[in-house]
Amino acid sequence: MDNHKRWIDATFKLIEYRRTLESLMNPDAEVFDMAVQAMRRQAPEKPKRELDWTDTCYKYYCPACGMFLGQRGKRNVILFHRPPYCNCGQAIDWTEG
Ligand SMILES: [Zn+2]
Image (cartoon, rainbow, N blue to C red; front, side, top):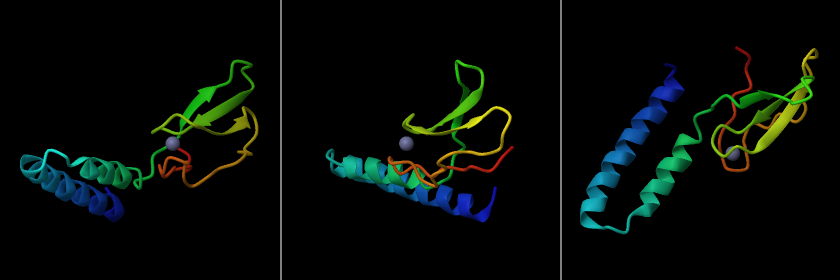
């Protein structure tokens, strides 16, 4: 696990612990759920890849919300439109392998 992921995991634990305490005192604590969700999306995830029905290209989707992110031909390396972040805030890891 790299340092960035380790730091994010530690932050999640802290926020989730705090959220548990908060929910005992205050049942209206959704703001912590939102904070946890926002923090989680900063850890880059690989996009979901699906082969197109024409069997000629791959399509890439956000792993968090399922939004279409881009596509590439089966035999070429050009990937169109490769955003570092999805609109939902999920960081996308475009490294191969
Ligand atoms: Zn998304």
